[in-house]
Each structure stands twice: as C-alpha cells, then as structure tokens.
Amino acid sequence: MQYRKDIDGLRAIAVGSVILFHAGFSPQIPGGFFGVDIFFVISGFLIGRILFTDIAEGRYSLLRFYERRARRILPALFFVLLVSYVFARLLLKPLAFSDFRSSLFATLGFASNIYFWLHSSYFERASELKPLLHTWSLGVEEQYYILFPLLAFALRQSRWRWAAIALCAAASFVWAIATVAAHPNAAFYLLPARAWELLLGALGALWVAQNTLPAKARVSLSILGVALILVALLGLNAHLAHPGAYTLIPTLGTVLVLVAQSPGGIATRLLQLPPMVWLGQISYSAYLWHQPLFAFWIYRFGKPSFEHYAIALIALTLLLAYASWRFIENPTRNAARISHKQLAWYSAAAIMLLATALVPQTWLINNRANEALQQLVHIENLYDHFEFQKNIRNQVCHSVSMAERERNGCLHTRSKNMVLFGDSYAASLYQGLRHERDSRHPDYGIIQLTDGNAPPFFQDGQIDGGASLRDINEAKLQAIAALQPQKIVINWMIYGKNSSNDPQKELEALQTTIARLRTVSPVSSIVVIGPAPNWSVSLQKNLIEFISDQAEFPRYMQHGLSANETQWDAYFSSHLQKTGITYLSALDEFCTPAGCLTSVDGTIQGMTAVDWGHLTKAGSLYLAEKIAPHIFE
Image (cartoon, rainbow, N blue to C red; front, top):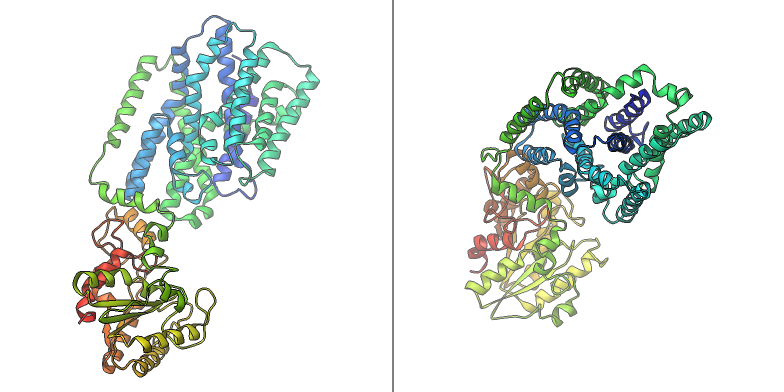
C-alpha cells in the first residue's frame, strides 16, 4: 500500500490541535478537540483501505489484521501505561490513585470510553487531572476494529456494499444527533454515536478504490478539505453540541483531503512539509504521552504552574513521542525484527505486569472510606437527602404565621412547656428535643417559634419571605407572654443575614431580648445554646476533600472547620453566665482537640450537619441527648 505523506500531515494537524487545546491554548484554537475526529476519519480510511485491498486480492485474514493492529497500538501504549502507573503511584493521593487504577484496567480492556462515560465529562474541569482520559478514543477505535472487519467481509461480494456502509454511517450520525442533547456523555464517548466518523473514512477508501478524479478537481477538493478543517479548529468551540451536525465540518474536510490524493496542489504541499510529516509520524506517541504528562504536572504543581510551563511541556511531549516512535513503535512494527510470537510474549508480559498493579491492595484505600466517598459525591441535594424541610417542620411550624401555627397544632401545650425561639438553626434542634421529650419527659410541650433568617432580636431586618424581623419577633413575644412557658430555648446562626457578625453587638442584642422575655414571662428559665460547628461551604464538601486526601472516613475532623465559633462560644459563655442565664456550649459536645464530630455513627446518614451548620436529624438527636439534663429539669 503506497505511503502518503499528506496523511501524516493530517495526523500532525490532528495531534497538534488536541495537544494545544489541552495545553490551555483553547482561546487560540477553540476547536482543537476536533483533532480526535480527524483521527477517527483517518483511521477509518486506512483500515478500510487495508481491508478492502486484502479482500480484493484474496488475502483477507482476521488474525493478520489484528496482528498489524497490535503492532501499531500495543507496544507504545503499554509502555506509556507502565510509566504512568509509576508516576501515579508516586504522586496521586489514595483515592485518586484508585480511580487511576480503575481507568487503567478499563484501558487494558479497550473499554476506557465506557469507563469515562460512566465517570466523567470530557470538558469538565476535573478532566485535566485524569491521566488516561485520552484513551477513550482508543477504546472507540478498538471496538470499531472488532466489528468493521466482519462487516467488510460479509459485504465482500455485495454490489450494495457502499450503500450498506453508508446506511450504517447515517444511522450512527442520526443516533449522535438524537442523543447529544439529552445524553451528551454517551454521545461523546460511545461507539454508536462515533462510528459514523470512522465509517466516513471507510466510505472514502471504498470510493478511492473504485474511482479517479481529474487533477484539477483533486487540487480543489484538497484545498476545500483543509479549509473546512481550519474553520472547525479555529471557528468552532466546545459549547456546541458534539458530536453533532458541526462535527461534519472537520470530518468531511478530512475525507475530501483523503479522497483527493492531490500530488501537486498547494494544500497537499503544505501537508507534506517535513515538519508536518515528522509530527505526523510521531503523532500516536505524542497523543499517548501528552495527557498523562499534563495531568501529573497539574496534580503535582497546580494549574498556574502548568500554564507557565505549557510550551516546555509540549516540547517534552514531543521529545518523549520521538523516543517512543524511534525505539518502540518502529522496531515492533517490523515483523523481521520482532516475530509475532515475540510480540505475543511481550504483550502478555506487559499485561501481566500491569494486571499485577491492579490487584486490590487494602493498604491503598480503605474500602469503607471509598464507599462513603461514592455516597457523598452522589448526593445532589443535601436538603432533600437529609429531609431537612420535614425535620424542621417547614411551612407547618417553621416560617408560618402565628395563626397557621395555631391551626397546625404547633402551639399545643402540656403541663409544662418549652418554647424554641430563633431561626432555622433553632428549628433544627426540634427533632432532638422532641425525641428526648417523648422518651423521658412526656409532660413537656414543645412550642416552635422559628422562622428562616429570624434571629431572636428586636431590630430592623427582613426574614425569609420578606416580613419584618422586628414585627415577627414582637408577635412571638406576645405568644410567649400568653404561654408563660417553663423554658425558653434560644439558638440562631451567628453569621445570618440579620446578624451583626460581631460578638459584642450580638451579645448586646441578645441581652435586650433576654430582658424583654423576663419582663413578659418572669416564670421562664432561659437557655441559650451556643453555635454549632461551622464548616466551609458544607460538611459534605470537606469530607470529600479529606477522604480523597487521607483515604479514611474521619469521626472527628478539623479540615474546613471555622475557628470563629470557638471565639464566639467563649465570649458568650463568659458573659452570659454572669447574668444567671443557662448557657450550653454545642461545641463542647461536638468537638474535641482532634476536631468536630462529622458523623454520630460513622455513616453518611449519621452526618451531623446538612450543609455548613444546620443540624441533621442525627446531629440534633446527638446534641439533645447531651444537653437534655440541663433543659428538662
């Protein structure tokens, strides 16, 4: 089969655009990801040409076909995988390494496209930290290589061969268009939505075998083809549905260049320039090396460092690619230097070596921690997962008018009564206090006077829903005056939108509230519950980060924990104890020198906080059990 330098030129465009796109040059080459589509068409064309020629000459052999594919793909791939494994073991944290091993296993089975379909999006930020993400395209090609030779052989004597292949390509294209909107990951990674690109190349190979174009037409088509490729690479971007209708631009452009076979046109001469041919020859190795090299660098030194050294890393990619091409790819492709038996032995040894690395090792990662991590990352809505609205009785006894509380039975009294006064933080105490009441103190009624963003202060502000904070608390004061409860339990979020974020001002506002409560209900004992642990963003986020780094589920944790609560807690405690108020420190119950409690029983459902600080039902039950003797007395 005649060697064509222009095909190496096309490979150079494909691999160069992909590497530049991944190296952070997407503003300059926004459609760089189309390089993979160009590769698909080239592969489809070359494989089609090999198979159609072998069939026509009566030397079709599946074994020989797969041996040639193995010589082309496996040696360099196995070497890159081995090197990547070593660096992954040295650099990656346990859970990241566990993910790497899973992707390595999928790559060995040429199913990494399926693995990444299930676990990631190609364009997401985290994708740049996946060393083997790029192997998804090898999975697509290898799956195609299993099926297409059988199809080509089945159609060998059919006069409808071209039409049958075109129909398969059209069906795949329609499938891609139909699925890309609703299931973009499936359309991107899986063969059914990608086969049309390879089949487009095969159709080009079949056409070339049966037709010849006039010289002028060939020149024009090659120029048009290169122009379409450049339009896609420079004019399209990742925000478009892909693969889809726009993917036709670079793929049709590639087919036109392949079909034109123009020996003297300007486009062909550009593709045949020595630097283009050189890059095309090492393109497979360059593609293999770039992603792990970039990913490991970003993982070790960070994104800013990667951006600073991007050009140097591209140069290192090309150096490694040349070495792989020179010392691995070229020798193993030569059957005279390495027999098929030797190739089989080398491949088996590499697979065995890699498979050994995949044997589960308990010291790499705690299975319980990994299970917890998977549960954590799949919680889409924390409030729904922990049934927060139900637990605080939202729109039943929380964030409703006094008249609705009356209708809903929220003001029901018993021989002794306790008023829960504050915002949603106070409301999250309800489940725990109710449990303690039902278990040990059935003579107590619990009256919940809580509203969203309604700290127990008589000051200006708007609560959730837009009502006046001062007015709503005046209404609660009147209810307390009528109830004359034995206990008034106060709690609120110290960083809420109606809080001062200043402990001294907050204490002054609280003292005003206490004075007014004592005036309207002198029989009431007032209990102030201090702030619960406050986590940056959410307890869920910090657990994910901790487990990913340390590979264990922490019972107590400092990571992501705010230190301000400790200062506020000490300030309130020292000042309120002097006034005869019972002050109960939630931090004393939740926290130790090792950090604060993350889960009451070491499970996800036992987590103590819904978000950054609202207590879950489990957290509420835990705290209430600890402080109950000081409340129900």
